Amino acid sequence: MQIAAKKAVSIDYTLTNDAGEVIDSSAGGAPLVYLHGAGNIIPGLERSLEGKQAGDELNVSVEPEEAYGEYSPELVATLNREMFEGVDELEVGMQFHASGPDGGMQIVTVRDIDGNDVTVDGNHPLAGQRLNFKVKVVNVRDASDEEVAHGHVHGEGGHQH
Ligand SMILES: [Zn+2]
Image 1 (cartoon, helix red, strand yellow):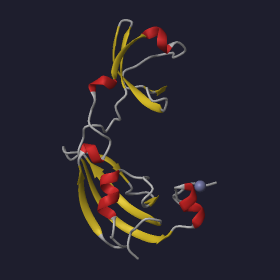
Image 2 (cartoon, protein in one colour):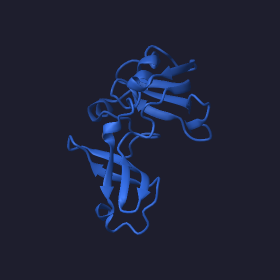
Image 3 (cartoon, rainbow, N blue to C red):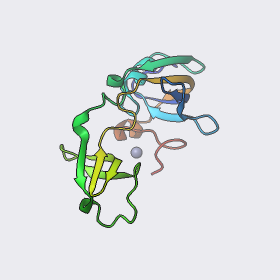
């Protein structure tokens, strides 16, 4: 069975950056299960998997615009420490949920703390990076009508509800 829209696909994968560092991997755990054609995974990877079948292995390099976007300096802001009232120990690297300009939630990361000035970065941690995936297709099956309606996979490796 070939990967196409409305298929539930299981993949083993290892994600490395251009420096060869492993960023994420399914090794040692369960495969990633996703609903093809529903935007569950980054567009560049989803498109490369189209037409593949169980047992196929591929190496895919995904440019930032097909992954987590280019790094945008406009998403970096300096806030007053008072904005973080209630946080016991503010540290570089901490992440917070914040409402973005479009009203949606985004994760911001504390980049720098200088006195009362706290620099936060709303870019995705992988923004601006080319992502190199080594992927093996483990299984392909038809998604159920319910899964297609929900836009995600149910059961093992998927949503449990
Ligand atoms: Zn569901």
